Length: 187
Image (cartoon, rainbow, N blue to C red; front, side, top):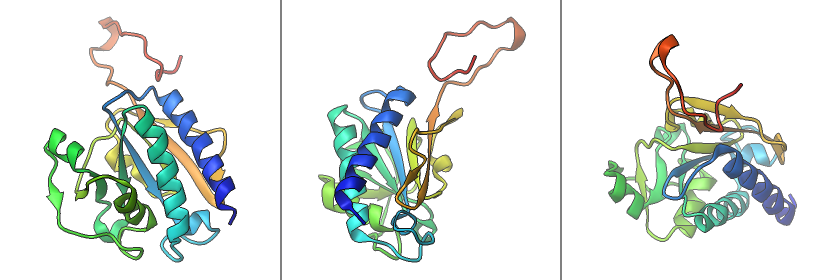
């Protein structure tokens, strides 16, 4: 795997999703990552620490420049708990859980998050504004309603399928209501 190319492609995808989602400073972006899938394998069967580090570091750099928080989702062995900065956990009054992610429980993305974040903790749930799913890791449970699928221009990263989600406010009120125009609503 060409790790330099992986970083370039990850940055392109991340920047596109940041722009298209309209995520703002202080909001949360969730990342689901299967390094096994990126490496051309099957999710959960061949985690790569190197791949996890390249992707998490690249995504974190793009988000940090904009003041957006990263939450890295773990695998089903940790009930898809998330690694976040303690600052975010305290700001949102999230419930911290006691676990240290490994390659086999949590995955390479969470292990990398512990390496690159300033003061990482693991929390059980979060409501992110948007997110990136690399390898069909099912991030939807951590993106607030109403979810809007975003199809990145680059649909694969290595061997992994790539999708993304953003969110928009719910439309309520029925036929008599008027709505503010937002970038996520389709015509």
